Image (cartoon, rainbow, N blue to C red):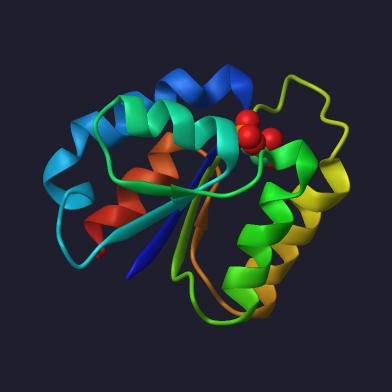
Length: 120
Ligand SMILES: O=C(CO)COP(=O)(O)O
């Protein structure tokens, strides 16, 4: 099962904390992590095995959306920062739309992510 990990800058620390709090799940062999570039750098540094794609503003969200559309990515954890503006907002909206089109679970905050991973 492939899980996408994405966090806006203001939420990256929370994402790393979330992964650390659920290490036993994210280190499982059957789970592969894929991530946008900068988030992935932090996730890797925290000791997780992750495939890094492009940074979000350079097309990373779009790459993850493509993986969702192709049936490669099964779950998206995307900690968005609702208090910041993002130049690539269209890509963010597109990723969320593609998750809805393909009925792929998407968590946009830690509380929802917690519920989703408990359901794995
Ligand atoms: O911008 C992002 C999501 O929209 C995240 O991208 P980075 O992980 O490269 O910062």
